[in-house]
Length: 306
Image 1 (cartoon, helix red, strand yellow):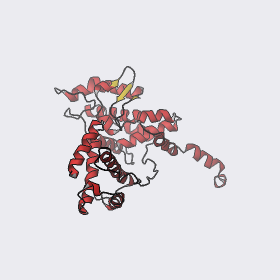
Image 2 (cartoon, rainbow, N blue to C red; image 1 turned 120 degrees about the vertical axis):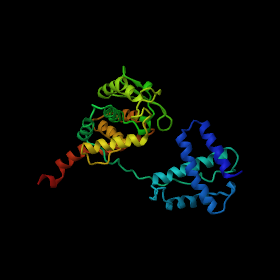
Image 3 (cartoon, helix red, strand yellow; image 1 turned 135 degrees about the vertical axis):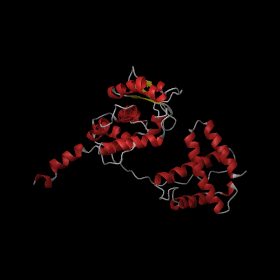
Image 4 (tube, helix red, strand yellow; image 1 turned 45 degrees about the vertical axis):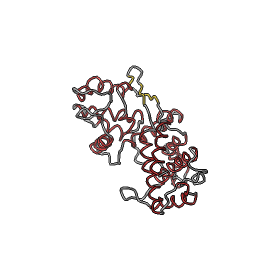
């Protein structure tokens, strides 16, 4: 059977098992790299693929630039390898392969990097309060920033919100189909709830006009807001507030988590709020809250006593 046909069946299996459309697409893109590699080596039969073949592919990927011509990071490389491992596992389960050649292939070691450009409470407040809320789009932008800061929600999760996901009576926000197809409910807080109430009742109807739709955040033309628009508005308002850090929607997510941890929030609660699958992912925010370390350094380092 041809590789393209095997890929088609694999993606169908992913859909049956309720993987997100984005994951199905990403796996297809990543496996296209494997097929390109196999074609260069004139390997057309999947049964000819061995562990040695995939080990060579892993080295080949390391030297392949991205679409933008930049070097591939470790996370990108491991993402490609994850697609290959899943594909080979599927082929063995379905009987296309007698053994799984990817089983012994190890992921590259991922660096334990810290989030960059986390905003201080003063910077976050300055950006939010600098938004001109006297205009329809300005009020929408302020509401988006309040929600990002209050909930730590991801860009895609924010764009997928519907009006029905907002529970103003309880001050809660339902996030459907988050990363890993997981649903969660997050508290909004009083300020974000207040802005959302005004936005839903007074601002959104003006943006929607005569159109019909259930998405919460809309563009000037009444369409669901897109990923680039969210990124642009976040960056624009940071610039207007003269905050020189590179601010993205994900920076607001990091900022929300860091400020909660710094104020002694329970890590399990922060994990639930952000929708992290592992507590280890949440724990990295502990390393950003070094106030106690700075105080100990100032108090006990001999150089500080002189």
